[in-house]
Length: 385
Image 1 (cartoon, one colour):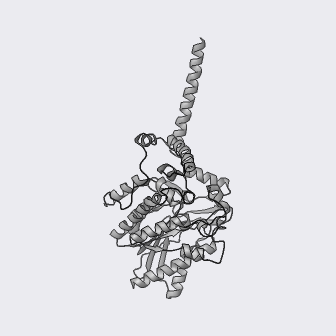
Image 2 (tube, helix red, strand yellow):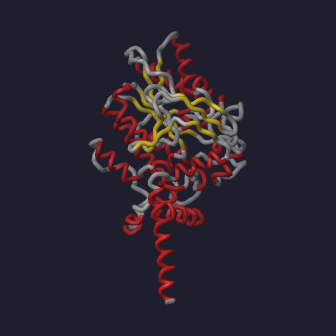
Image 3 (cartoon, helix red, strand yellow):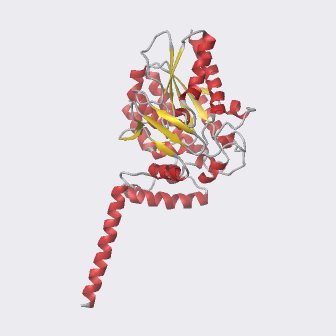
């Protein structure tokens, strides 16, 4: 009799645990770590009346013709999208006399922290129109929070024919180190490369190596993904070792892993994806350029100070621009034009250029980037004339 009661108790515990794990597994198919990060930002004071929706191909995108509000500790700005779903003015018909520039990137390109009228592309467009005596340049900004090169390529593949740009500029944020791994890694790169008809070769080393077969199989479970990534990342970070696990999970490795072994190789996926964008645009006869967005910790010890702590990035420290140099050097080897922002921001005598907690550019930061973009485009346009 007693053994039957124990069996019943054990069965109830087992079934309860199984159902709990099943519910958690199903839930994780609808809510990802990006959602958890969003909740953490809310806990730190951010309020987003959002214009964002999930998307099967792009992970997420902005809703068309939507009006929302982004309220952070340091600012409150309107989030309004046009009929294409970009945080920009409505897009006019293509005019062959006007040089059209298409901006792709993440929240730095989208302009978190400023209104559209204060954003770098609006500033650059006005400078060029004033200097050239009229409506000569049309800059379309498609920046979307958390986008990285692989998502930007997905976006371009679908939309570049509709938008007909003369030049595409990718704003590469250093957190893209994590994002490209998170949004599919090397597997997605090779799938995209084949879809575009470019074969499977890549000029950079495929690094880090794949996970062992058993781990790869178990990673099909979302619950195992979360546990493996959380525990694995903690262990790997303490050992200062880079693998696909912590690169896919820890968004701040771009700064924390600066002196770890194989740090330079960890950027190979980003470099491969940036080059793949260039290869695709070349088939469309569209010019291409890349700019690396320096985070505040590379510009001044006091820039983006209080917000670093939450990501485990050291406060009051000026970091060496090793990742910026790595990306710029590799793009130069590929013959890809680059817009250099590090030195103009570093040499500024106006601060702050980044919000202390949020870490995005302030209005003054956008002014410097707008000036540099205008100078870069003026040279491009003169070269095309």
